[in-house]
Structures are given as structure tokens and as C-alpha cells.
Length: 51
Image 1 (cartoon, one colour):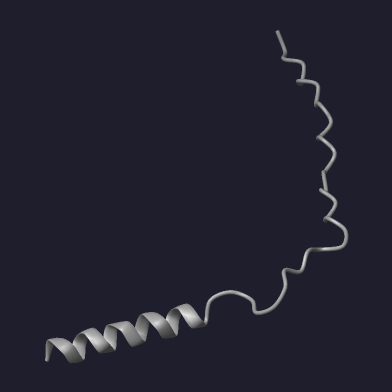
Image 2 (cartoon, rainbow, N blue to C red):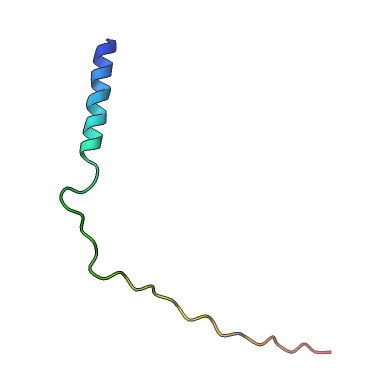
């Protein structure tokens, strides 16, 4: 029983490791994505308070 469980666990680990990652050479992007920055919101003047 213990040997069967050990064999099953090893097969499961090997199957999980076999499916990880890309196969073949590393592919790098040709141009890095430009960071899109939104303009800062305009400063709003505080409303005048009645006296």
C-alpha cells in the first residue's frame, strides 16, 4: 500500500512538472510596452465660503 502511494505521488509530481513553462528558446518582446501615464487632474480652487 505504501509503495503504491509513493509511486502515485511521484507520478503526480512528474506530470505536474512536465506541464510547466514554455518549450523551446526564450522569446523576448521586440519592443517593451510604453508606460501609459494619465495626466494629473487639474487642481480645483476651493469654493469661497460665505462669511
